[in-house]
Image (tube, rainbow, N blue to C red; front, side, top):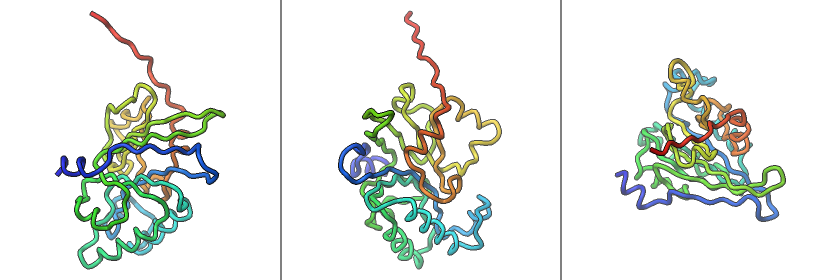
Length: 219
């Protein structure tokens, strides 16, 4: 299944935000858990029921994302039963923007593909964004996977690790050191007011990270 997904789907996306008259943006989010009643309790989500949660997620998305924008969705879309699956399709089709899908542990490739809404579907995605920074055109790499990765491509050169899955739990206890001096962020919707977070927000939130100097020992 893993090989099938990779061979059917792209694993790299290049986005140039420096071209064109229309200002586009790139966003990240994950772990909606649509129709999952218990996640409201597990995450302490501020909703009375799943209908209220669905409305907040859809509204937050469309207030944030324009039709010309791109969203990287990092998995775990829905817990819907078969009788509710069409409602998931309808909700997803009302969301703005182009969506690239990174599969989560609760996702099935065939079911996500059947929705027919996603530009690409894969287990791992590298997004290279060309954008303006301090008046200069620069390229920034975002490595996207549902699960957090300890060491990712170009991490020592300042690339970013974007993940979901953890629902913020990795920020607590003995595992919290995972984020120290690493450009890693959990983009789970419950951590960002149930709205997608832009690449600029990611860069800003992790601007405090000081990468260690590379040292090489030759024997």
